[in-house]
Image (tube, rainbow, N blue to C red; front, side, top):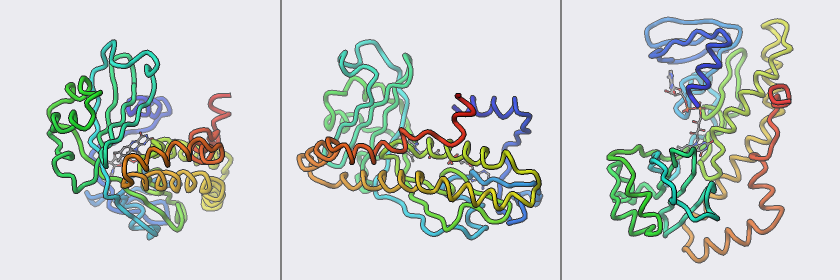
Length: 280
Ligand SMILES: Cc1cc2nc3c(=O)[nH]c(=O)nc-3n(C[C@H](O)[C@H](O)[C@H](O)COP(=O)(O)OP(=O)(O)OC[C@H]3O[C@@H](n4cnc5c(N)ncnc54)[C@H](O)[C@@H]3O)c2cc1C
């Protein structure tokens, strides 16, 4: 995905500079860099993730909360026969106590695994994955767990809320503005949807001085879907600490109700602003 984004940038004539650490931004559309340089543009975009310096220096943050739960994430090679025919191609969520194994088929060659647990579960969160321990929790998936590499990454989840997504001619985007726990698998999707909506909001801007108003219109239009998704992702996370049999009953009966399912999948089913221009 990063490769596709890079290629799209290059096609659009973007100059890509790596190893350029941003230390702050100003409402005048300026980005300040660790090497002492300052760059000024019609619009500065801080898509700099959960610890966003752009958000911090523009004074936009209301809340940054980290969850107790986190995830080990890895790709493993896929093999024929990994799944029963009725499960082939499906996303599968398994629970055992507070441990969770998420299985996502990606391509014919790769399957994505997320092994989640509370940060306090030090044996399970070890980045040199204790395969015996995880296999004991999820014996039906031992054949996949066996293929995990030597070392994987561990990350906890953040929820970020801001009083505004922009200040003057500087804006924050993606996790910098609205990170959410990955319980609905929508954080990256919302970052990209909102980026497209931002580009759409700016396409009719004729002069730089019109940008702050366009940013406010963009935020007014997009906040509802973004905050809806964030709220339901946080709510879904609440089931983590329920006993297994209660969790299963709660999830099954709640998801059987069309209103609840509609809320949970609303962001995934949402037609992003600007998508009709791209995809017709
Ligand atoms: C465990 C876990 C599982 C997830 N699963 C899913 C999923 O299934 N589906 C989904 O859609 N989303 C998922 N997400 C969320 C998804 O990863 C994020 O929402 C997405 O990566 C946000 O993209 P972003 O570009 O806003 O931020 P990031 O991906 O964090 O990118 C920020 C970039 O800014 C750079 N940067 C940071 N600070 C500076 C600085 N000072 N100067 C210069 N550069 C800087 C960083 O190096 C990084 O490259 C998951 C997240 C976690 C933690």
